[in-house]
Amino acid sequence: MKTHYDVVIIGSGMGGLVAANILAREGRSVCILEKNNQFGGNLQTFVRERTIFDTGVHYIGGLSKGQNLYRYFEYLDILEGLEFKQLNKNGFDIITFDNDEMEYPHAQGYDNFTKQLVEKFPEEEAAIKSYCAKLQEICQKFPLYNLEEGKPYGNDAEIFQQSAKNYIDSVTTNEKLRAVLAGSNLLYAGDPDKTPVYVHALSCNSYIESAYRCADGGSQITKLLIRRLKENGGDAFKHQEVVGIECVDKQIVSVKTKNGDVISGDLFISNIEPKHTLKMVGEEHFRKSYNTRIQHLESTISAFSIHIVLKPKTFKYLNKNYYHFKDHRKIWNAHEYSEESWPETYMLSMGVRKNQGDWGDQLTAITDMRYEEVAQLQNTFNTVANKNERGQTYKQFKAHKAELFVQELEKKFPNIRACIQNIHTSTPLSYRDYIGCNKGSMYGYVKDVNDPLKAFISARTKIPNLYFTGQSLNMHGILGVTISGVVTCSEILGGEYLINKIAKGDIKAETI
Ligand SMILES: Cc1cc2nc3c(=O)[nH]c(=O)nc-3n(C[C@H](O)[C@H](O)[C@H](O)COP(=O)(O)OP(=O)(O)OC[C@H]3O[C@@H](n4cnc5c(N)ncnc54)[C@H](O)[C@@H]3O)c2cc1C
Image: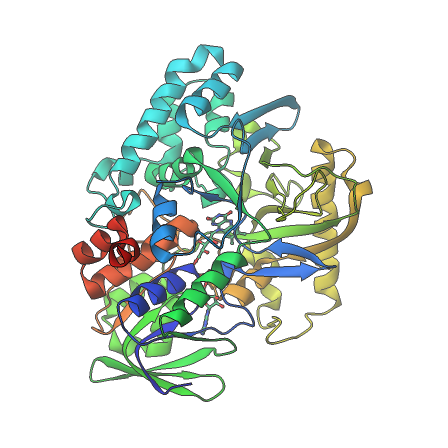
C-alpha cells in the first residue's frame, strides 16, 4: 500500500465506489479503505449451504436502456459485465393483505401500472392517473435524477413539506387503493407523519420505469466497479477499518487504520455514517451547532431478515416481490408493532441465478425491527472479518423470531414450511456490524416533512478537504447513492463539467 494518495475514501459502499471510479478516471490517485472481508457495503452477498444471498439490494430500478441508472452505469462502464433479470412487467411488486385473496400489482411502465391497477379498482382510474402524473412531475424536479446539471435537490418547497401519506390520501378515499399505492413503503421506511412525498416518488418511480434483479447477487456490481477502479490506477483494500482521522490546522492530513497503517491524502471522502466520521475527526474541529445537529439526527428503523435455503425443486422461482401487510388500514404504522403483533408486514424476494430455471433456491423476507430489541447485546460485535459469538440467548431470540416470521409467511404461502432446508437470520446487530450504520438503520437518516432541512447533509464539510458521500447524504438505494457519488465528485470537479461528461458518455467520445 502506498502511504499517500490524492483521494482517500473511507468505506466501499456503492457511493464510495462510484466516487472512487469517477475520480480515478479523472486522473487522481485514489484509495478505498474497507473494514470488511468484502467490498460493497449493502451490496455484499453471502453464501449459506452453497446458496447466494443478498444483504441489502434485492432489486434495482431505472436500468432499461436510456433510463437514469442505466446511463450512470454506462458512464461507469459496468453494463457489459452485469447480468440482470427484468422482473414481471405486469407486476414486479405485488401488494397483499391478510383476509384478502386479491393480489394488487405494481406494474412497469406508467401506462401499464395504470392499466393493471384499474383492473382491480375500475372506479379509480382518474385517481391512479393523477397519482402517476404526480410521481413523474416530482421526479422532474431533481436534476441529477434526470442526468441534468443542478442542485441535488429541487427547489419546490411543497414536495419537501407534504407527507407521502397525506398526498396519497388526497388522491382517493378508497382505503384499499391508498394502501396499495403506498404498499412498498418498506423500501424507504415510510412514516405517516414524517416521510416526504418526494422520497416516495423517487423510490417508486425508479421501479415503475423498470425493475431488475442482479443475477447471482449485487456483489457483481461491486466486482466490476473495483475492476474498473484498478484499471484506472486506483487501489482498494479490505480489512482496513479506519479508526482515526487526523485533523491539523483545519485540514485532514491522514487516516489511521486498526492495523496501525497511516495513509495520508489531499482529499478525504467518508462513505460511512457522518455521526461516526465527526467522532473520528474530533468534534472540536466542527461548529457546535453542526455537531449537535448531526449527532441528534434520527436514524431510520432497522430490519430483521430471514434467509431461507429452499429444498431443491420444492418452491417455484417468483419473478416478483411481495409486500404483505396484516392490516391494510395500518400500512403506515407497521413499524409500531408490539411483541404480539410482530411482524405486521414483510417484503419477500427471491434471488435469481444466471441460469435460473423454474425452481428457486432461496428467498429472503425482511421486516421492521427496532434496535432496542437487541440493544442489550450492543457491546458484542460479529462479522466474518472479526468473529465473535453473541451467545445462547441471542440464538434463541433469533430462532423465536424466525419461527414467528415463518408462521406469518405460511398464511400467504401455505406450503412454505415443507420447502425449507434451513433458515438463517440477520438482526439489527448484523446490519450494524456489517455496514457500520448507526443502530443497524436500514436507510440512513429520517427525512421529516416537519423539519425538511434537518436531514440535508451537504457533501462538503467545514473542513475543506473532507467530503461525505453515500445514503446519509442524499437518497438511499442504489440509484440514490450512485447520485450521491456524483454529487460529491461534482463538489470536487465541478458539477457542469462532470454531468456533461456523464450525460454525453466520455468513454465513447474519447474512442471515436
Ligand atoms: C435490508 C435492506 C434492503 C435493501 N434493499 C434495497 C434494494 O432492494 N434496492 C436498492 O436499491 N437499495 C436497497 N437498500 C438500500 C441500499 O442498499 C443502500 O442505500 C446503499 O447500498 C447504501 O450505500 P452507501 O454508499 O451509503 O454505503 P453502505 O452500503 O452503507 O456501505 C458503507 C461501507 O463502509 C464500510 N465502513 C463502515 N465503517 C468503516 C470504517 N470505520 N472503516 C472502513 N470502512 C468502513 C462498511 O463496512 C460498508 O462497506 C436496502 C438496504 C437494506 C438495509
